[in-house]
Image 1 (cartoon, rainbow, N blue to C red):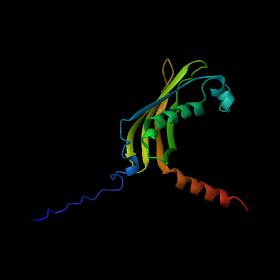
Image 2 (cartoon, rainbow, N blue to C red; image 1 turned 60 degrees about the horizontal axis):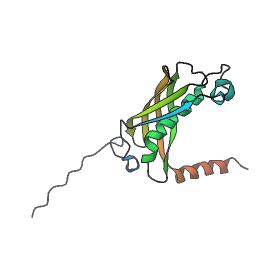
Image 3 (cartoon, rainbow, N blue to C red; image 1 turned 135 degrees about the vertical axis):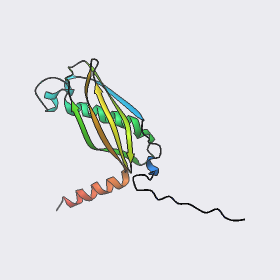
Image 4 (tube, helix red, strand yellow; image 1 turned 90 degrees about the vertical axis):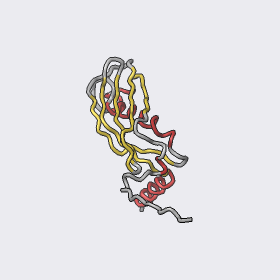
Length: 154
């Protein structure tokens, strides 16, 4: 019996499938929502003086949507951390209205997941853009944080 030749195809690091992210694929979607209360407004969080949804709170809802899309697919001991946001906040949302954010995976490269994100209130889109998260081992990440804490003393 003649053995079949083995063929190896060299893949760039971006093309390699990271086993930690093997279940995370483009088109996965997540959503998150929030009814705007006084504690979600710009004066309360210190980002402005008009009592409408604060941009940092809109960003929080966007990040929650991204988490809803992928976090449940990560293996035990791993989680994603936000590393980049490029979003606009284009319309004001008053207290009492519901804001819904959506995040859709558009690319997975190495440990980095890129999302297209949008936020809207009950009347119109209020913001959107892109968001990136990197998947980390919680134990290794914590070790790095603890080492940083150790450098700060003394």
